[in-house]
Length: 185
View (cartoon, rainbow, N blue to C red):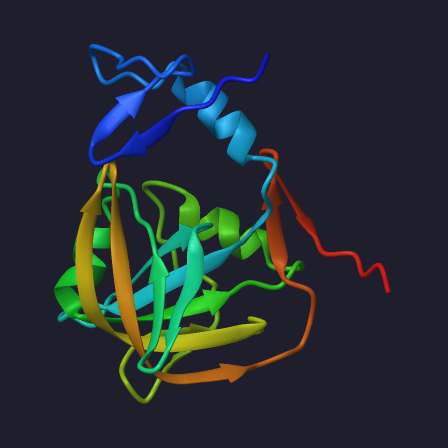
């Protein structure tokens, strides 16, 4: 039997339609991750340059387009991120869509306690954010809004410039592993 949980007007119901007294969902975070892990995501690096000129970056797998008019995109950093507050303070950022051959870049930017940009070639956009070399595409943004959402933030960026750098297959994340897209037709 499948279990489902719905939320209506702030009320959480279990699969029997009964309110869960603690607001619990009836499943744990491991189940949530396992199920959502079946949905592949692209891998991006969000970058900015701090006031002292130092580049800052973070890997995100939760990135999406939001609106065409005005052009808006969104990503969802964890509230525990040490990089996001630094990027937020700058007020602008660049989303770099990684190519499938850029797994080493992804791992370096994601690693804690290292110089994230050591040996990673990049240039600074006209709006002041790092564009990593050899990415599939980049999207330069100004910070439009930040909303709290559980243990994450919803960050809206207003797109000010964007470009496809090299039309290669993007790096993907699926069921806890990295891979690439395979065309079916």
